[in-house]
Structures are given as structure tokens and as C-alpha cells.
Image (cartoon, rainbow, N blue to C red; front, top):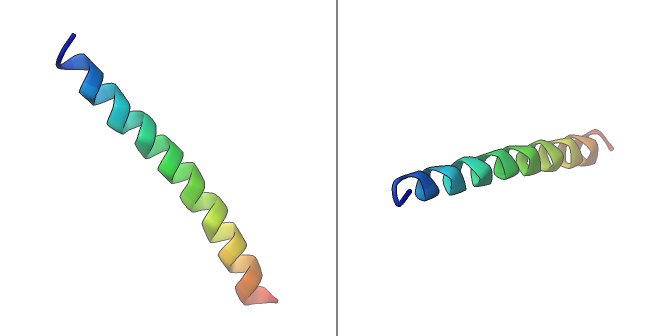
Length: 34
């Protein structure tokens, strides 16, 4: 279990970061287009 926990946390953070990046990219693209 000690090896399982640290593997789940980074994966979850990676997914959140990926979603956040997509939102930031969309906002950035809109800002550049304007």
C-alpha cells in the first residue's frame, strides 16, 4: 500500500494539470484572437 499511494497522487495531479492546461490554452487562444 505504501507504494500504491504515491503512484495514485501524481496521476491524479497529472490529469488535473492536463485539464487546467487545456482551459488556459483555450483562454490564451481567445485572448490572442481578440
